[in-house]
Amino acid sequence: MTTAIPAGRVARNYNPLPIIAEHADGVWITDTDGRRHLDMLSAYSAMNFGHGHPALVAAAQDQLQRMTLVSRAFDHNLLELFAERLTELVGAEMMIPMNTGAEAVETAIKVARKWAYEVKGVPRDRAEIIVAAGNFHGRTTTIVGFSDDPGAHDGFGPYAPGFILVPYADADAIERAMSDNTAAVLLEPIQGEAGVIIPPDDYLPRVRALCTERNTLFIADEVQSGLGRTGTTLAVDRVDVTPDLVVLGKALGGGIVPVSAVVGSREVLGVLRPGQHGSTFGGNPLACAVGLAVVELLADGHYQRRAERLGTVLAEHLAPLRGHGVDQVRVVGLWAGVDVDPTLATGREICERLAERGVLAKDTHGSTIRLSPPLVIEENELTWAVGELAAVLAELR
Image 1 (cartoon, rainbow, N blue to C red):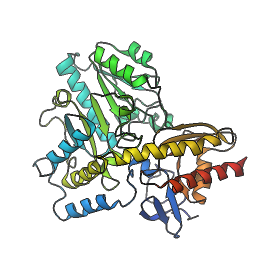
Image 2: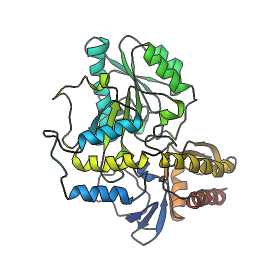
Image 3: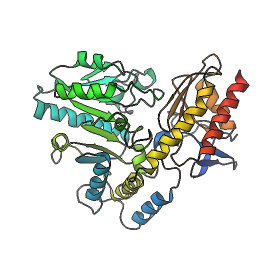
Image 4: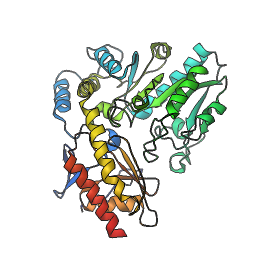
């Protein structure tokens, strides 16, 4: 295995696996020793279409020759077109472009509070947003303030008030937490960082109904789950739910540039006025060109259907591992959370052994491994990766 670059001038806010990537193509990453590794992480779903997808690279290269940035001080020829195509794809009326997922979540929080004061009539500075335990919405100080993960939360206060934490997948808890000051309920339809936690089918519809009944916004953070990952365009599509706002990111930039957006109803996003929110790079021409190409890839549903079909294959091959080094498996589309028997090994140890065998995955929360391969993966590559996981578990038993 490639020896990791010694710690030097890069802050140690990550603990990467000991490989040094040098080149990537499709679903394969080649390290500096020339060894190929199957990418079963997809940069946390940012690489849904694999590395170097020709349509995305061509869109970026073409735009690089034309124009990359003018700021939002001026309009450019791709922004309105990108907004039109993206909102059509997800069934929304309006969007606001940003760059990173965390930035888009912060945008949704600001919009929800402003809507609460101007439309719902919540008294000034009293707006509350209900969030779920186990959440991961980003790394800004506002967002980590309502995280219950000590690693993300501790040591960065003081934190912004106005957030109420309730258990995930518990609609009754949301109902009890609601008040006249509730501006929004902010949820991941499927919790990714927590280990691909899939709620019961009636959870999101109940949340939607509660929010409608109590004149409260429902915000779905689909930064990881959106844009084909779960076998549908959005994860909420699986249960036929329409949020007031949807946060998108990661895959929207095709793994080429950071692109995020908040999409939703005109009534809600329309509360913003010039000068009240912005981003120098948000909606830049290069981002819009790549984003348009991503939307085009998803427009006919091919990748969504592919994720659904291959997700069935993934589930079928992971299921026999239960009781043989694996305690629990959760699969939705091409996304899986695998809980390894903690007496056997940590998730990190499993991922290190997988990397030695040419498979790249990521651990979370101790003994859980996340699998989220690019949607372009072939069935034989997928089954080979699961076979390598089975071999690692057999070695440890």
